Length: 298
Image (tube, rainbow, N blue to C red; front, side):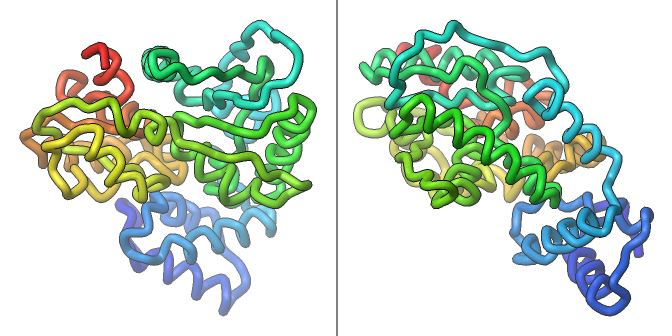
């Protein structure tokens, strides 16, 4: 089987192989982790189930080991020294969960989002010792480690008295709704920041919007903020998700190239991870929605 690209039937092949033989080998991992879990082929759940099986059987991909180690030691998958903010103490009913990618890779997005929220008069606090939400661990098939991140964060939220969480990253938004909801009484309202910009903030223009895999249901909201934008997504997937960026950066770049070269209009993302992958090819052609709006004083 050719595993140089993420072929849809690869997920089915590995799923059937684990059901029939009960095992995978190291070579199989090369194909298994070339899937970005975008689910355009409707086989992402099969791929993820095989990843879970592999990890449970002790067949752990090197990049998963590295990511897990970084989260355990530094609180983020990038292995960067923790960024802490002053702990103001007291009850934090509404918190902005900054997320690993905005904090460590795209601080310009974080700053822009904070500026917009302040202009809207939205008050919030932050968790001074914020750590990874764990979404990447679940996507990599390591449920045990992902659940550990969930427990750690829920305890922080409960201690702080959190009732409302604003996220910038769709991955964090997905994790809180999919993996946290109902765990140990976790029930805060979870909001993706773009929802708070809807209604009064608009910017006209011909934009090609890259809808992220974890927040496609926000496509209509974003197009109301950017009226005149094309209805269809700039691309089916930026190519970096599901651990592909960490596993094979050249594959992530080749998929991003299809999105960048396939659109004549300026591409706008509302996912920091999509922004990282797409803007690495043509920075001037790709913008993030928070940066775009903030730059225009919206």
